[in-house]
Image (cartoon, rainbow, N blue to C red; front, side, top):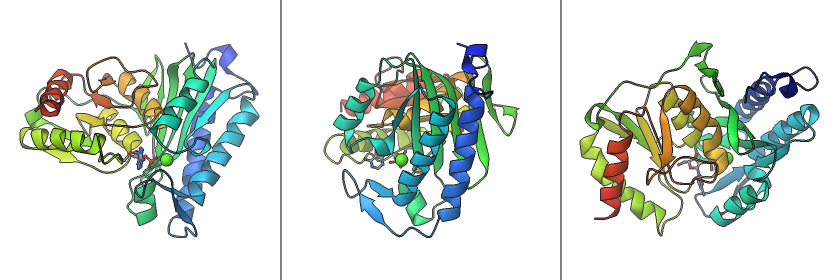
Length: 283
Ligand code: 2AM
Ligand code: CA
């Protein structure tokens, strides 16, 4: 599916142009609001934060997309009840959409609230379940990561390529601390404990979408995290595919929109990472 085909143009704008426009506009607005949050709520747990900025940015993106593509479906984090079951169900409900926009208005809300400048806007468009456009925007550094299926992935207009490290011991990797304290957090702590001595180093910077973009850009050789939702991963998944990397679930099964336990690498360290995580989970 080519995102620049004539049938992808409605009102004169391509899918990618609209995605970029939404991410840039929302990102600038989000950045302008940093430090002036008046209301902070928790959602699923004390670790799951939401602000009026998350909600406002999602509304802004949703309205802009609806203006250009009124027949398209929309799945955004703030339109879904909190928690993993509701998020999986919401995806299921829109899974037979022809065109589906998948949006996280602020990925890394905890960072945003604390003024830690590592958060992003993540926007993907899927056609019959396959991501065809992916945009991740980092307002703090004004970095826009864009991919179109079949056309490559770019940052600052430069084509991205995954890193060339071929073993974990030369790799910088990232992961996340899952919010679920009962299953996912203990499982990932085992993975972290097993991997920390075997890699060059680990980072846990708090925005899954940006970590994925960094794998695509060759700044990280891999990333894994448990219990993510489609809107955390979809845009970044295409960045990585188009930059020559590989994605799967943590068991090595191919990526699709419903995958919640993600492993994303430069391809070269993929099997080694999956093996280490598997061994760690079973010890
Ligand atoms: P969010 O900021 O959009 O919630 C941090 O490890 C990553 O996990 C972020 O991308 C964060 O996205 C995501 N995440 C997914 N579920 C979460 C939850 N329940 N609480 C906090 N972060 C969550
Ligand atoms: Ca979010």
